[in-house]
Length: 210
View 1 (cartoon, rainbow, N blue to C red):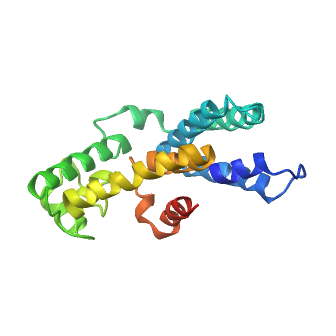
View 2 (view 1 turned 60 degrees about the vertical axis):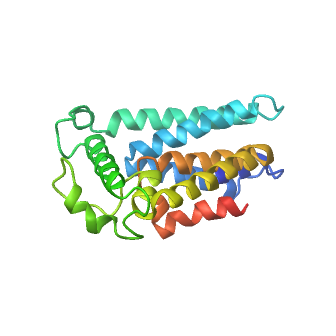
């Protein structure tokens, strides 16, 4: 989303092209997912992108798209989100409660296997023995860093941290658009699993390659 938006803003061609159409279609798709984590991470990245662009003479071109997209997100969230379910933390089906329990379970696994982890792809195998406050199982911890540590141990966790830190350091000086695109991906994966899904995780490696 951020990549396509940046291309639509930096292209010299002022005609309506695929670079302008893609952010609109992706925005609609994000709204329909009703994923609070995706919305909040995207809005956070937009805010940071705007702040990084304030010193540039082009920053005014960002103001209107960001305002429109943020307004659409807020309106649709109010209209379609399940407010009662989000606020009822005692509901086991509450997505916030579920994620908190996923994280607690992942931390319990890490405490028992801090150095070596449980092995790649084995999170689900040991999850049933550790699950806290959950009626169902899951393949992922719904947090990229907790999941990495639980499966690959401290070295895998440190490796991921270094990879992310190096990316942010280099992209910040190279391109604020790449920085923002990477940021929204990492923020989303603090509460979700798109890093581990090949179709969506591929975008992370594309961003790194750029």
